[in-house]
Image: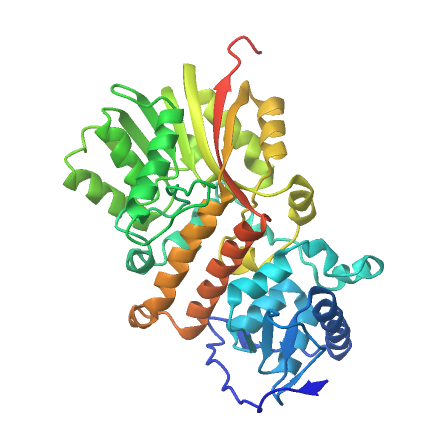
Length: 428
């Protein structure tokens, strides 16, 4: 190791053990911590990562401009990672055990080919720390509302701090340069969200008199724009916070005669609709329930109808590898979910419904830019997050979540797409 800077001392992040029990507790795992230390040295060497220690030294030589992992409490970091892998890596950030001057850059290094972080001959080590998702978080009809409440019912005021005035919590579609790169600014985000919604409504052929079912209301912007086209909209949500907010917005717009929001699980949808639209909701459905989700769409779609989905996707092999793994994102952000692959959507619709993918448009770089704007806004308004009663651990949790998601789209680990489903009317 070589000394490169003066030692720094960073006080621990205050952690409420009642609110954050696994962040407050540092595991006692000397052997696993030692293994984690060896793996960290290997990753730093192979990925050109600069790991800085509290005494000012670096773990291994790193090239100029390398991504930086700054360890404030190395023993706690290694104990957490050794005990629970990537969950421990996230909890270590929540606790303030490590930092970095460029969170996106660091996470991008780790998100590139993540399957190679652990050497092939040591893959058996995953059995030491990989957990299965808890049965209580499986998104059954009984559990789904609790899962949704965990994230979407935190506070409308919280989401209002970093979302734009449309209160749209999904990828926008920005104008692009001649090369196709998205041109994203805070000022053009509302217009970009409307562009996304309008493209989806066009894909579903929503117009005057259309009967529309929306699965997953959000805060109501899509229902508003569909109703403004003259459609009659029924929108389903399991979030009580979103329900109240969306109903109020619809009433204020004078569209209550055209748009109705119900507190209802998608499985209980009734009626016949010319169009079904659903924006980034399939990720919360859970793999065991994808057949039922698509069967519901097939059941309520009128003859000749169209279903338009916006979905985050990942490569199929990575989806399979992570489908029974309890991750940091599942534990702290989106319990019960799983991001599908395009292949999984094709398989689920082909095996269980008469629906078929008729169009598919991907635009992952736009989500990276959407997340950048949200992350910057969230960070800038940190004092206001505090004023709402959320502690520093919560802020670090959400900083990591937003940065982790952005890095996933920037590296291609994740994508987002608008998908058109139509029915084979003669299939039985």
